[in-house]
Image (tube, rainbow, N blue to C red; front, side):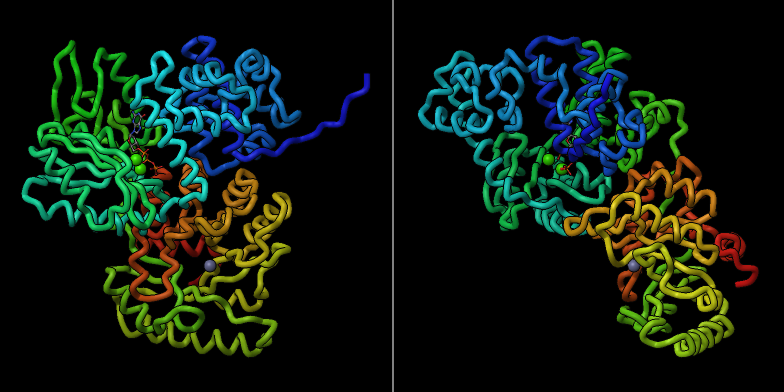
Length: 594
Ligand code: DGT
Ligand code: CA
Ligand code: CA
Ligand code: ZN
């Protein structure tokens, strides 16, 4: 028998999710069993939230890392990536109108509605289905269908128009941008005495690295007044949804904001519900149902009777759970751990004893070495590592570079001799060249206390080349830390295509520390990869990568990533007090003195 050559079809996570959603819609119409439907829903939300590409996981036989991926779904994905199609999905969809499938992408349109619309308007072509629905709606034909009210027609039309608008898509906000907007909204809301409390929830409260829309909850006994007050916020551009207890707007900047009001007595349940994540809430609801309890934003219903909670701790307590930090409400095993009161004690900003990735005006920083050291002391740090970009060997030559190092070394020694508050280390941030070699020779690197090796050029390498490149740095005995390993710039540059498992295995073998870079547009290593790496026992440095005294404060955002990666203090090397840090760091540096 002759085998056909394999053709592999590389699809993005978004595309895989759409294919699964269409199959799911077909199953829902045909009444597939609830477990299968739930597994598909789980797999879809997992695929939509991971940073790893499904394709890469598949190539590495790691599909089982995606939750909800049972054996049969894995087989389908395998078929999809090898042949570009899934015969079972095609069979499922075959006798359904092809025009129903694009409709499930419209907000508020589920499988059943899509099916009814497609059947009623004989939508056989996916390409034109949405436009045909829009045309039918604008002619008032949708509300004439059985089961479709006027309101439903209006909602569908609006959703189509909004989807068209967001096609020129609003990028997700950096967490710092989301914080700034939320701060302005909360300050504005709290001007009124009837706003008893107001909080920013959703992905921002979970400290997600990027935020899609803002979710605000208000505690008040005057819900209508509170909503009206919110709608008069000067930055509101357009009201996209209005009700007695909730409302949505689009700000002039384009950012969407959802608000919900609740009476103070049930604010805790509202906060819980609206914090999410969706996956966490779904698991929590399932867990509660097993105990005969039903959850909502109003409280917990026990045999028809509603218990209300003014704070979230009480809400979780009623379920027999410890309070789960928002950062790890991810739909992993946080509920089981909360039940046995074994949640990890996540690392905190106040645990940080030093910062090892700091630039001065020696390279591209704005402050002097002495100013940065003073700022470090003001932060209460016990140690500070200066890691400027290294001078170039090509343009300056070895002797000039060695001279620069000697001069800087003298300043570091002077500072260390002159005071006891802070210990200063002298490192460089060295480039990992395209071939995996470093931009400085060993003879130069040996003069430093430590080396952060980072990629700053040639990001478009194939997976194999890029992985080998990082491995080159990992194997280098004089490298201590791999800086911002994925190279991503959020909304600007995709993470590099790296075989993370191989990278983590090598980092483990060669005793290298991985950086969590706190720059808000980097947040690199990304949180889901931090989680994976930490499971292997990898150690991290959370670094500000400060280029000014001011930006030492960015450490908070790296801590957010660390917490979302479930890290405790013990996985973060720069939580160690000075004495232990020096010893531990020397080991990572392969240096006998320091
Ligand atoms: P984002 O806005 O994309 O950055 O992410 P989130 O998590 O802020 O998502 P969003 O704004 O759609 O919803 C905010 C929270 O509201 C979400 O984290 C949990 C809750 N929520 C929203 N939709 C549902 C739902 O269908 N079921 C449940 N149980 N909770 C939901
Ligand atoms: Ca949100
Ligand atoms: Ca929202
Ligand atoms: Zn860098």
